[in-house]
Length: 268
Ligand code: SF4
Image 1: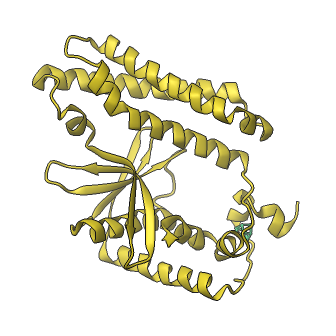
Image 2 (image 1 turned 90 degrees about the horizontal axis):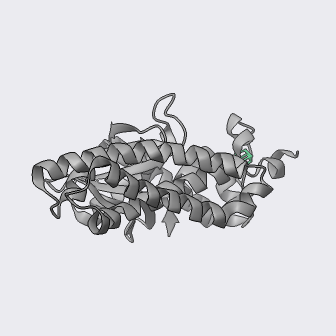
């Protein structure tokens, strides 16, 4: 089975995919990659726990402050647990562990305050009903696994949302800031999820999002038929690379500076 991330990797650099999948060369993590992965994990875990926390610990009588305290305390707990697990790795790559904790706590503080205001407002109108979480956050699932035997492709969608009419929206969570438009690999990734959802659910999926969660910015984009066709084209190329095991040409590009294989490919 080929993963959606193999397609994006191929788009970056076929040689990278070759090293990883055919040569089995472990990918050394850069500090940026490690920090990005940890921040991603924290936000995912916070979103995943959100529904349970709202269901079990929030009630109509609570004010915004009290709701905020409950949500924020849980977020801080998630940050602490995940950071403790990764403390040694972060230290070994020279990342300031305490600074990162402070930064994340500040980011999530603002997030939880906004959510608390929305929750209070919703409960003021509808009470605490079963649809509170779904109506407010449209959330259907986190880390939703989707695959197609027909295509030989599988992937995990960071966040899947559903509107009241049953339309599904795949969302890719991103660290950092949105700049320079939607990049080709980002569009390819979300389009691949849309295609897989269409195969699984038998519905049309025509809108996806990039969500820059640290700056609370959401970028919607249409997923057209031509985007889904590009997924199939790249998928065939990846299948070809993996079946033939032929070494692709190695090319020096700007992205090499951010690649974990840089030293292997081009020396120190
Ligand atoms: S360093 Fe450059 S050429 Fe080598 S795998 Fe990474 S992106 Fe490809």
